[in-house]
Image 1 (cartoon, rainbow, N blue to C red):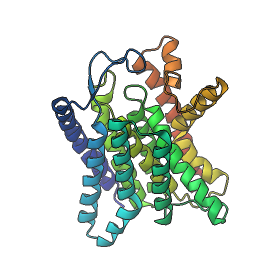
Image 2: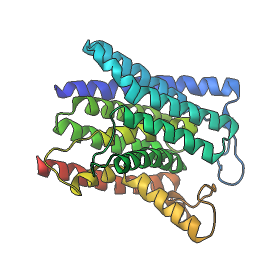
Image 3: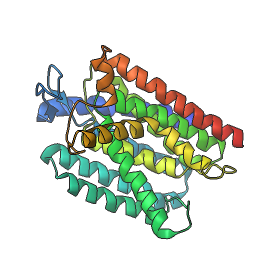
Length: 311
């Protein structure tokens, strides 16, 4: 595929994301869909719109539909069942949670059902050739990364910049192996994340909300699962997607282990993430996010190098 197609997906998605996120900020202020400071976890000095994730989901939907229309391949609409519709459903679940604070177990149940739908639709791993085990791995990856991205969305610009770096790496590897659809999705996702980051970099003017964090995490899980690095055997082939999303996995592991060690429920909110640890050591929000993204760039770079070596 012509590399310009990937560039068009990245730039087009980025421009549309920038426009729709700007519109969402205006709408949020008019409708009261904002997140106010609480003196604890939410330490911003003013109400911040929290429906940026809706703009992200709408942007991806439009880009997806335009791409299918331009390709002229109507069979691609079948991908709605395996990619777009479940992602929109998880975003809707997150939006309800933004508005009504759903019980964590209800959220997990909904995410699990959607992950099973994705598996049935063809996005799955085949590590063991034992259906039940491979299904469990697939569901764990999708649900785990969806929630990991939501947990990572704890500092201005962190979730969006993580999506940008991880999606660019995923797109590069997909292009390397001729997986054009996965590459196009990944580069479009990166563009959308960049457009959102224009307003979310510290000090943020808009938040993803659970809707946006779930949506980005869910899509990252799908595109990384769909990578098929030919010529790389286990366990190295499984290492590539893990390296691509190393930061959200590491942050969630750190938080869960720490909370369990302190005999706290892992779903308990708190300022105990990796970014908070760095800020407690004197770094600014921007510097803490920058340090974490440097770590992610290194891990994503390692994934790309591993994929290149195997070609």
